[in-house]
Image (cartoon, rainbow, N blue to C red):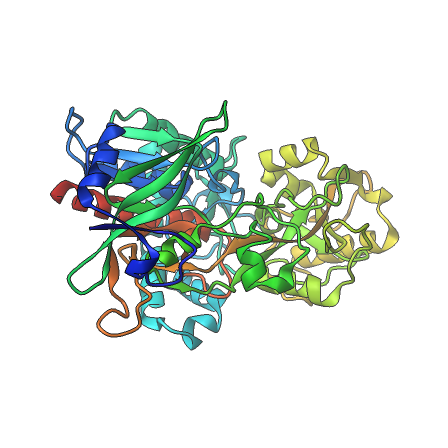
Length: 540
């Protein structure tokens, strides 16, 4: 018997609450769509985690033939890429060959050796108390060790296997050393990685990409103990022209990579973090997919852990927009500073949680016209010529969009000029930073002891924004979704036929995610679940 459970149910399904079909009926429906049962792997979501899982699965399946197992990707949007394609700071890797390249050090930066242990320590420190004071401590530790232990190979394989340039390394907030990799070209790292993967999988004869396809339910059946087994998905395909929807089904192992809910303002975000109402976001407003997983029995953890990124651009052309461009963290990593009324107020390389907390807890809200209760703060981001040059194509984009502008030092207000002079003294090692900053990226202004009033700095207005959700479906180190049933022996039992990776999952980042670890978890766990699902499909 196959059950299709709607996401309106809670936790474990009951027979009376689900639509129950004879298996032959479901199979005939699948066959009517020319889809052989158990001959497809279903990937839900087309961001980096989904694309990585797709390519990995394809490489672990038998060669293409008329009877070959297909990898079928379902994307609810009209275009693939998800939020991954917008990632701008880079991907973390500890001990890569790129970290020791000469151009990744400056006279103001003392090169430090990175290691898995150091990366692990930074991640644990960033994750905070949630890591040790909540359930699943052992599971969380395994996830973090898997993440950092695979980081070197994740970064280098993207370069070696797909030709992605990741040769530029910067230090972001919360990191002890520079370990966040990006390229030196015009394309941001998220777009570069996603584009390379997408182009590769689209060439494979066993890959199917279906856009405008929104998964609505998981198809499950119960084992002899009443425990759910995921057998496939039901989804609605919407015709882009007529806007008419058609319900379809696919049977096979299911991989969920649908992302988080930072843009789900009136849904999950309102449910778990009503205190964040009114904050703008980097994410478009669309509902999260977590209820689909919880309905099938998945354990959800850390759902109230939402990352507020300290720097989203306030566009002068549309200052009250609720969706904003991210001011990449690497702008601060390359030397940029944050100002309030002309003065620095925080170590810019603290964790996102700390920097956002300083802004929201100590600075005054900007007066704004009522726009859905918008809340934002007046903070200036300033980069000198050295940091501007190091930011490369990012700065070109921000300047082109009018999000930043260049101003001569001599035209800055007196307090800001004084702050720039003080920071330059700190950057060249004359005095210790009172705020605790020890790394200054590629800041060069005043390195010779003099500041040219004709030198141009780049300035933009930024404010905290909801950016990432650390909560989601609890997984094990194999990427299997763990069940919510509390009685033994089910407490940590994986749901057969269901894997997840990326922002849809929880348990890795705790209270705060390090910049650069989002892309990393997508690659690391995307590879793991792609291989796992391929093995199951192959043996079915």
